[in-house]
Amino acid sequence: MSISKNLPMLSILAFLGLWQGLAFYLHSPLLPSPETVARIFWQHCQSGELPYHLGMTLLRLIVSFAISMLLGCSIGIALGRNEKLNAFFDNWLVIFLNVPALVTIILCYVWFGLTESAAILAVILNKVPNVIVTLREGTRALDKDLLNMAKCYGFSHTKTLRHVILPQLHPFLMSATRSGLALIWKIILMVELLGRSNGMGYQLHLFFQWFDIASILAYTVAFVGVIQIFEFAVLKPLDNLALKWR
Amino acid sequence: MTTVHIQIHEKTHHGTSIPTIENFNLTLNAGEFVCLVGQSGCGKTTLLNSIAGLDSNYSGAIHVGNQFQHPKIGFVFQQPCLLPWRTVRENIELVFANQNTVPKSHIDESLELMQLTAYATAYPKQLSEGMKRRVSIIRAFATNPDLLLMDEPFVSLDAPMAREVRELLQQLWRKRPHTVLFVTHDLREAIALADKLVFLTSRPMRVLKEIEVSMARDSQSIEKFREQLFLNHPELQPLL
Image 1 (cartoon, rainbow over the protein chains, first blue to last red):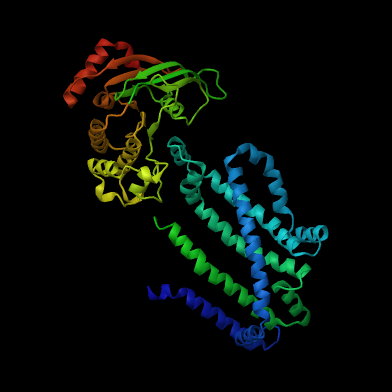
Image 2 (cartoon, rainbow over the protein chains, first blue to last red):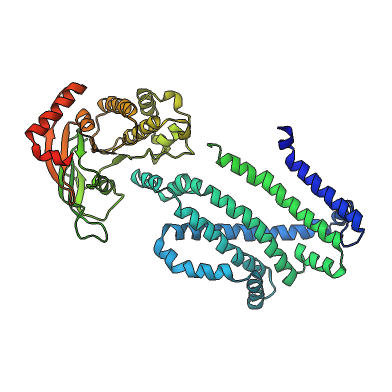
């Protein structure tokens, strides 16, 4: 029992051990040890560089994530509830799902200039179709009997959405949130790399030019850490609250 | 409470030329318990869905008394249709548009009558199937409807549990005698519950015969009534 409880911690320790062993064996600047990465991380924190660039990336992530989720959920639910609307927009969705992220980013920068809004728009255009598809499928799977019950008892649209539809869509919302965070931050790095003068993508590009692998890993660890904190401080408690009835 | 008139001239499903319902006329007196009896697939659920406004694709009118307004409906579906993420009490209270108008004492009384007081804060997954049906019955009664529709609510329960829930329904209805339209294909169940039996034809569905029921509802009397019914109305036999 105690072993299975500690398995996640043991797996992280095993990963760090493997990394340390490989770094010791190779003894190359191409694979710095965890201890070196930790030292570089601390130096970047003390200089204020890492918090600034991480903050800029997080700000872009929050804005683009919020807009993508809001738009994607609204359109996804609408398409899931209306067959004619879905039949009309289905092909658009397939097109937008298959346009490479790089193409959207380049087009947004070419059409709207190397601006903050163009960067955010590029991220949103890449993410929204995924949210739409997830929520559309969730909406199609809604329990029709419960919707009939709501209609029969005269629930308003808001009440039906809040008490009948959204609780059923919870797993789909969480799935879109988690996959969204993972996808968006990767796109943001590309957006920053191509057309911004700050943020983690910009910094990683510089470190790449200098072959500074330790700094690249230090920035990666920082970002993954932030996303993990968000998972445990926000998403997990939200999950527990919404699924209390189970 | 007042009488409810149901008139459906025609109801046809997409892709078929034969109407599902044709010239259906029924008047329910205030506080009357009416059982619709017909073969499976004759269109009973379609009729209830049309009355409840879940299917508005028909020609005709359903109104209360002399006013041409749609009646306030309570509905007990074949499945309990409870929100799994809400407790028993919340499921009942949620059907009220304004939470300030929830008749708490009325609901408490119904919970007690249906032997569910101890489960008021339980979630549906903690209840048996029979208990879930009882909650959906309380919910339907709580809104004080002009017309209470019940679509074979005991169909998936085993016989002893169906009998138990049926007896509790009768107790609640005696206490709050709303006008009820109850659909079933089980004649014994219909005789046990109804003030009036309405027999239906199939495809298109029409009212074939209306028969008043006024007798004691013990199993012997129910059986006797059933035998007499077949003797006096042999045309009903193919329907059952």
